[in-house]
Length: 181
Image (tube, rainbow, N blue to C red; front, side):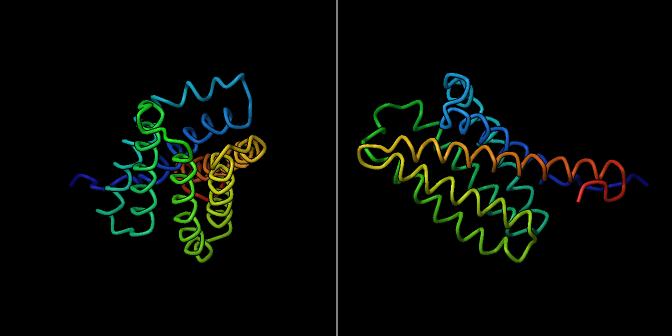
């Protein structure tokens, strides 16, 4: 009889989120002459948006409400970010700040849940909330470049945590034991 084990989609979701966030955050932090901002446009739609949405749907089928919600919501976040970046007509002054604020609040809710799920997820969602709220403030009104730069750096740290969780899940699964804590 064939093994019908369904692969865990969470590492793919964490990698998709971490890679996309790293690109955008590097631009916000002022690294590489802003090249991360150009690199993130297609990545936001495909890796951040579509892939995360698919991971979220797979998590719904697996019965994991929290991860289904997180990955589906942030799939929508990245597709919306792509749309905002590529359609000048929706780029009203302050609109990016409002968008980031709403997802910052959602991240606080997810952080409250993550507190119960372990220190690493707690850290991930805390940093994500700080990142999004800093970027919201940085993009509100006349803009605040220092807050955008701060949000960029916290976003880089957030992406490193997400990519560590990806590595942890993949390496521990491949070795069949706890290699990374």
